[in-house]
Length: 595
Image (tube, rainbow, N blue to C red):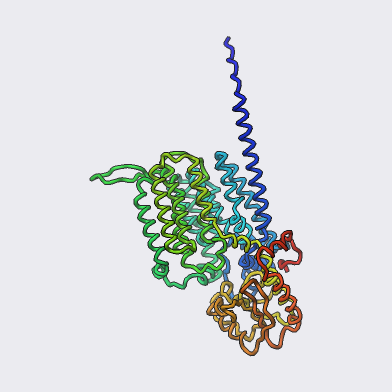
């Protein structure tokens, strides 16, 4: 009978080091949590005006049974690009909840879900902490998360979709559901879903994945066919209003600045040169020609680069040829480039040739952020040169890059795409109060005027129309919520027109859709008069023009609205925030919501 060897005592120094390491991790976790709560407290008060356009659909359906921006009898229009969030707006309307509060809870749920997913990844502690911090301690992430639009949810869903392929080499049920959600969150999500499904099929090469991809395609084809039949247009109305007006892709490409065309050509050349080492390593064919082995493992390793290239194509071919009015905090580029950083970190970082596409994806994401920044041409080209040189050095020494360096590279991507000016942060923290003092107060004043129950034209559709009567028809002068806008109904049917004016455009003509100019011309005529100017912020105001024979009650209430808006909205962002630090708008009673 043998006896077990006595266990060797663990050195007390190792025990102390391990305890100290656990203590540091605990402190870091508490710090990330505290920072996340502070940022959520500050930026959860931000709600962009465009979000109220989508929420009006839910209220219209609950009140009249019609899925439309206006009520029964109005032309059908798809004034949203986020079918998923717009569909969710039906729930607070049916339950009698304020839609703003409801979507703040949805945003908090997304943040909690993100934390749970990161925890389940089982990554090394530094990576896990980085994934927590890049979102929880990121002010731009909180702005997009709580803004009321689909920006943060789209970014997280894209990261989940491509992260599954990068980690597992297949999608599975969760992945196919994520593909559906991505496609129903934004129109360009269709492209992301299709590319992810096809790439995952090329990696796994399983019949089950082929069936899942086919089912996703059938569901999406049915949805797009149904909505095209219902609204009478294949794309949302925002696509036609915010496009550059080009008739084809050739004209759209010609409209791009020369630096964008040069950068795109250089990117294609770089990717062609790197294709062999990225997808298969060395190989030889007949006549000494190089042969690329596109193995499933190589395709799986190249997922971050695929996502970066796809996002670059979306930014350059779609976003750069569109009129993106609400591009606050770099919203357009952030929602497609931030997922690249998350995918880079979603599986354990190791040395090896698989890091070559990792580095190239990171370089492409940072380069795209530099290209689309507001810096001068010389500055951008110099920055691109530095990025190219750094990429070349890293690729040449790719096998020497350890997890620490790769972690730094991925974090650099997240920080680069999330960079924004401090003025953007202070603007976001005070924006909702200005919106309430101008749009909300004016909307409630118009709704309280019995003689203004007819058609109303507004130059900034959002919170203001949401505060009106449930059956009141509204004309959006920007054209987003009005299909085939051509001046109908006749201006005689209008009771009032609210123009969005600036010092360089005091009559409110420049921001108006060409088809809506008859409304503005009528409002400037002798049948209407200006009932008052409501300040929105420094250098912007509403010019409220009503018919001469109407609005006796409004003329009494509007001076009060104007006086309060002038006292609040003309102050600095920090002054507004300080005076409302403990005042969270979505918790107020009496806000515009269910009628």
